[in-house]
Length: 550
Ligand code: GLU
Picture 1: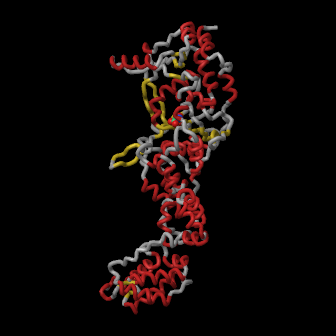
Picture 2 (picture 1 turned 90 degrees about the vertical axis):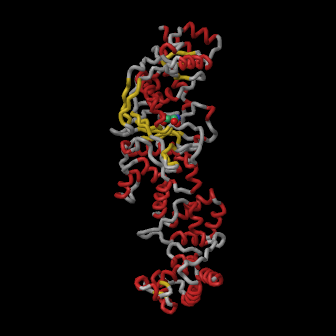
Picture 3 (picture 1 turned 135 degrees about the vertical axis):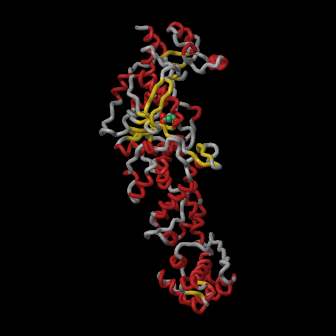
């Protein structure tokens, strides 16, 4: 037994497997040429963040565009920060947004696929096997430094203006012997396992980031921790082992990890693994008083994906919007392919923003309005009531009292070539539909300044007599026009514009009066359709009510 083998046996006596065992347990994936394997590796430390959703989308569409695999892996090595239900919140949140998962955790409890377990806390033995091999090769060693000792070293480095960290001559246990280690262990001292880094700060490494382009950085010379004292790996080590054994081809992750790439590339090399391609995703930004800043988990409600659900954004609209953020060529593609399935979009990582794309709520609203305007009334009814059931139960009661009536109201100006775009999120629907429901209806009978109340009253009186509920749009309008001459109004807008002084107003003013009478608003979708949905009795009741208020 070599000295290094002695050390390995001393530190990890319980490990009886070798890397070869796992290499054969997790053989290469059988995928077509060019297929990319991506993943997200969230830590279940809280709710699903917008950044995680965005990163999941980018990983998903990368795998989809190349016929590859997208999987989820739970990085739960920090048990202290873990929250109850964290896995379910993240994974089920992704599903709600239509992000399909090929492998790994598909909900809070179920994992599928041949490369599991997909949860780091269940992979301790795998990590330890590889660490044992590194120790055997003299590439890792135990460190018994206490937090106080490490702190003292840092202070000394700071005082001497030396880069802080466990490197070079500061790496106290670098050359520890098996005998020394045995003595420390016998004394009950906890230890971590560190990498014996062969790197030098003088050397520079280069790598091609598939999003950001070529990046150059100093080589890693730090003997960073691989296994913590509880035998659980650090992120760096778990990342290398997992993405190797799970055959990830593209690690697309938040750009806060860029500075760790030298560590990661060094690990892949020392472990004898082929490194994945890295792509670092810039955080979503937002404009705050004219300045661009990162979306903050503390300050911005939209950082939590739950916000979108509460507001009633349709998940599909949010994804459609995020696609415009992810790919600078998505909007052009969408214009050319208005009804195409997003899955057929030829996504390219090179089309991502390098500096951080802007999250723009107004744009999200515009995209959402378009998406909802394309839905059928039945779909809107279904989605709206599902939202209301959860977030506005009172509104749910109102909407579902007479489903056919609500659906008819939602069908107005929908399903034609130019559908109206009034609803961006389901929470907008309450105001949009208010005049259809007695309990929500708060009419504003204020007339435009140009219309005299006496004229309004005379018109409504005359209209009551001629109103026919079954009129189609054209007949409906003709009937208002026909009342114009007797009231001194212009039936023809052009004639009115040519000489306004010759009339008391135009047919447009009269239809506005009718709109105000029936809906209590000046701006609504097609009034003829609204009146048909409301029904004759209710329309007459409202017309009378308005007349009484004049
Ligand atoms: N657990 C890491 C995170 O949530 C994963 C980063 C990665 O994708 O490698 O930031």
